[in-house]
Amino acid sequence: MNNEKVLPFIEHLVELRKRLIVIVTAIIIGMGVAWNFSTDLLNFVEKPLTGKTYLTDIKKEVYGLVKDRYPALYSHYQLQKEVVADTKDRRLNYSAPLEPFFIQCKISMIAGFILVLPVVFHQLWLFIAPGLTRKERRLVVPFVTVSSISFCVGALFFLIIIWPVIINFSLSYETEGLRSWFNMSSYINFCMRLILMFGLIFELPIITLLLSRLGVVNYRMLAGKRKYAILASAIIASFHADLITMFVIMLPLYIMYEVSIWVALIFGKRKAKAVEASV
Image (tube, rainbow, N blue to C red):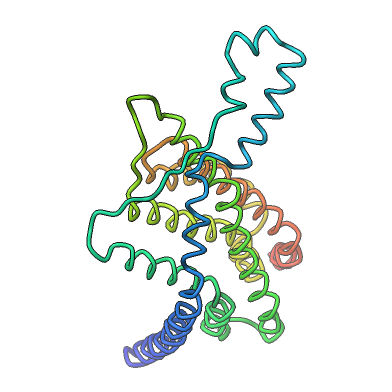
C-alpha cells in the first residue's frame, strides 16, 4: 500500500525535474539572446529619472485648463513653474566592483525568461496535462498563447504606466537641499521585482479559468470572497515599504480578481451547472 503511494509521488518528482530542466535550459538560451539588448532595456528603465514622462504632458494639459478657467488659482499656486520645469540628467550610480555586470546579467535573465514564456507555460501544461480530460488537453495552444500574452501585458503595463508614476513621485521630494542619488542595484532590483509581480498579477484570470474548468472554483465561490480578496491584496502589497507602491500593486491585483470572477462566470458556468444538477 505504501509502495503504491510512493511510486506515483516519485514519478511526479521525476516529471517535475524533467520540466524544470527544460525551463532552465530555455531561460539560459533566452538570457543569451537578451544579453544583446540588455543595455537598451536598462536605458528604457532609466528614462523616468529625467523627470519627463507621460505624466508631464498630462500635467501641462491640466494646468493649461486651470490657467484658462481659474487664472487666480493658477497664479496663487505658481503652477507655471510646474509647466516649465526642466528635465534633469540623472544617472544611476554603483558602489561595488562588477556591480554593472551583475545587473546586466539580472536584466538579461528576466528578459530571457519573458522571451521563452511560451516554453515555460508549455512545460507547465505538460506537467498538469495528465490530470486533464482529453478535451481539455486540446486547449494547450490557447493556454500557452493567452498566458504568455497576459504576462507580457502585465509587465508592459507596469513599465509604461506604473513605473513612471513611482519614480515621478519619488523625485517630487527633491529640494535645494535634497537630491536623489539612486543606487543601480536597488533601482533595478526594485523594478525587476515589480515586473515579475505585475506579470503574475495578470495571470490570475488564466489560473481562475483553469480552476473553474476543473471545477475547483466557481463564480459564487469567488464572488462571495471579495472581502478576503481585498484583504489578501493589501497583505501582498504590504511587503513593499512605501504607500504609493503598495497602492499601485493592490489596485491592479484586486481588479484582476474581479476579472477572474467574470472569467469563472463565463467559462466555468457549464461546469458549475453540471455540478449543481448532479447534486
